[in-house]
Amino acid sequence: MQPEPVRLMPPKSKASVAAPGPESGPSGPRARKAIRSVWTPDSLQGRDYHGRRWVYTQASVQPRGFSVGINLSPERECDYRCRYCGIPKIDLRAPGPVEGQELTLELEQTLQAIRSGELFRHPAYRRFPSDWKTLSRVMLSGEGEPTLCPNFNEVVERLVHSRARGRHAFFQLVLETNGSGLERPEVLDGLGLFTSQDEVWVKLDAGTEDRFRFMSGVDLPFDRVLARILAMGLRRPVVIHSLFARVDGSPPSRSEITAYLECLGRLRAQGAMIQRVQIRSVTRPPAASGCSHLPLGILSDIARQVRREVGVEAEIS
Image (cartoon, rainbow, N blue to C red):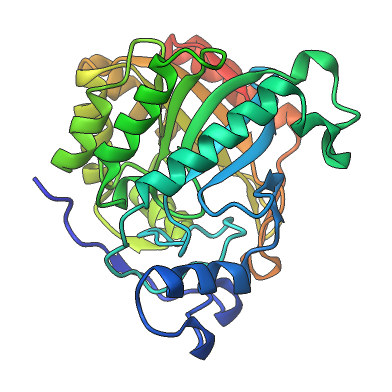
């Protein structure tokens, strides 16, 4: 079943959403590259593209090591308008397919640069601890929602094939998603190629309908969000990826945190396999968003409540 269309709620300010301008040009691969080169710097929120289009590198804290990211949305296609997101999104339209051969070449070049140590001679990585200079995972993520990619299955097939060749160190595959495309047959086929060592990280930033719509910027029933998580959690273990922030100076209310914990509890009671919960906060939100970072003490308290009341592992990521 195809995911239902979502209605975007009006942004709080024009600065929070960047619509494509005249420089975008006509549609097609050349136009997509033009959009990306106009907006995206070579390093974005710790992501380094080094002139590539699809593949970026990024230091990761959980676990210590190096992450390679696969950007399945270079035009920033996303059906959410999260208040805290620092990546301006274009008006949602049908995303174009990933260029599989180009992506494979970029990935092989990146993996070779990591294996040979060439990448770590770059000034940005010279001071990294030696135990960080190893590949830990390849992330299906990017600057929009990866499950909107029309040839998602092909991308996963190429990643699995690259891993199976054994030319590089084994890497874990991770999908980071808001869950909106998890019902698509193309996505389910791709995730069917994931092993038990691979992971699906699903966003859950709220415990109530009002908070969800406020933070996500979309007019979508919250029950549908939870149903998508449940459906995936019945198929395979999922990692719940949750972001909490101060909004206009105020942290999430106690009742909101309680509702969030109850959502996790209901998902488990219904049979969802929750591998662990990641608790994080916003780092560099748009200035107009009103969002700011939560202190570590509050994040740690939420994680403790998840462990105690829901009975699953929780980590600060």
